[in-house]
Amino acid sequence: MARISIDLKAGKIAKPHTDTIIGIDLGTTNSLVAYVAEGKPVAVKDKKNKHTLVPSIVHFTQSGEVIVGDEARERLVTDPEHTVYSVKRLMGKSYNDLRDLRQFFGYQIIDDDADSLVKIRVGDKFFTPIELSAEILRALKTRVEEALGNPVSKAVITVPAYFNDAQRQATRDAGRLAGLDVLRIINEPTAASLAYGLGLADAQTIAVYDLGGGTFDISVLQIQDGIFEVLSTNGDTFLGGDDFDRAIINFWMGNNRLDPQTLQTDKPLHQQLRLLAEKAKKALTINELFSEKINGLDCGISRNDFEALIAPLVEKTITCCQTALKDAKLGISDILHVVMVGGSTRVPLVKKLVAGFFKKEVYDSLDPDEVVALGAAIQADVLAGNQQDVLLLDITPLSLGIETMGGLMDVIIPRNSKVPMKAGRQYTTSIDGQKNLKIAVFQGERDLVEHNRKLGEFILQGIPPMPAGLPKIEVHFIINADGILKVKAKELRSGTEQAIDIRPTYGISGEDMARMLLDSIQNAQTDMKTRALLDARNEARHIILSAEKFVAQNRKFFSETEIATTVSLTNSLKKVAEVSDKDLINKAIQELNEFTNPLAHRAMDKTILEAMKGKKV
Ligand code: ADP
Ligand code: MG
Image 1: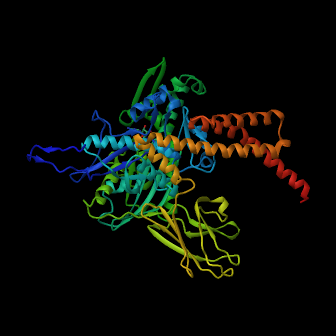
Image 2: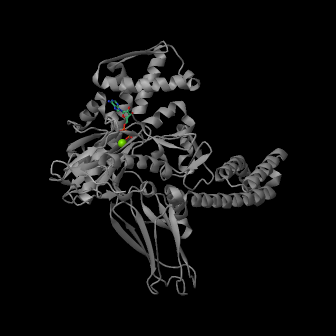
Image 3: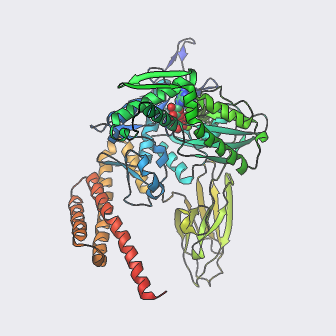
């Protein structure tokens, strides 16, 4: 039902602003939404009209209800198993990408297929990071709709400047799943400088220093004629305000002669101390001293103590700034302004050291939590046609190319190229009468494609039979303003043509996407269930066959019990594959995989060893 608002002053029915385009900062720790009202960007507050920040935390209740934000944050203490945080770190990643970071996450990351997009297990359900991010976006969408009193459907979403294609695509997919038409994905530092209105008049080079809860990014931008170009980026994906909190906790543990190890076992105390440490840190931004007691522990700290604790961490960020300048081939004097972004830049020592390094006052008049969302709202307003056009130009973070003979990487668009961008090259066939040519697209800087990251592939079919070397096949790479890649191949003599938008292997398959879209349409729930179940069954069938083949071929390498367990896990999977619960099936798949993975590695090692013995090197 459409709502009509009445403009009381003018005494007429107000034009509904159904075309408001919103700006969203989808953060690791906090997210927020903003829009432009009467020419000014505003961040939207919660129902109590207090906070603009929405903690990027998703909680699932027993009854299957989804809770996002402050309330979900409380559940992190009371029900950590069903509460997911830092999803942004998982966007567009495979299990292989995250292998070494597993311990960081309190929740379970699933590795049923190490090369495809990760899934997260919450209780007995499985979710992709895209689905979880969509929950956060949906909460933001609801918030702004309640504030405006009418529905919104279009958005600009920000991402870190270093996000690759897969991560940008994942963010876009999350938006789509949340019912948002994502008009643009823009870089966070670009948004921050837009919020300060930098570079709209004169050409200039600036630095954007972003210290959030768990991550640090420094970006050097050149702005000219309203075009934003990222010259370099640097940072640390595991450095932020959370580390400041941890330093305070350790300080208190020491003062109370307690072993920090006790926190490992006393989780409730740990959570209490974490909240108190954050409170202390924020208090020390204004006051010289903080003092409180919990559970008989003396939790006092002065600003001097705090600064001594965090100085090495802040110094680390300064080293990153140095590297970013070096990569951009610039000196400190080339930087006209330094923009402060992220809650942790409120810490006085951070401001002092950053200003000291760049030898100038930093830009901090806007709220550092809100500045990215405000900039996104301005960009949204530009797209809505309400402001003079500001073009956004970004760079490709990694080289893009295709696989050629012998598994070599042939770069078509080198890293740090500006986007939008188009580049092409000619290839030919290597076999007489070759009819098909596989185009496999990779991203990365290594010479062999096996060391780079595969983004996708397709086959150019219908090349007319010709002797090897005669066909002329032109491959084009086109990157649009969002940094999303389209690859086209054309045989020039025959005109045969084929193209793909890169739906990275890492990203999500068309089928998965369809399934998730169905999920968001409530009354299509049964359809979705059937489909998800069929998918899970297919996967189970595939895995049962491989497990049986594996046991048959490698029997000699394993003990009786190992074989018995594999067989029994396979049998359990066979059984659950017949019932109608995809989560049960996924769980059984996971159990079988977890058990057989180390066996497979062992079998492989032994096979190689045997082959070498037989061969005489
Ligand atoms: P992200 O970009 O990672 O989502 P934010 O920019 O929202 O993160 O920053 C969150 C961090 O900022 C948290 O570690 C929080 O404790 C810290 N923070 C917020 N306000 C203050 C303050 N007044 N003083 C010090 N740190 C603060
Ligand atoms: Mg941020």
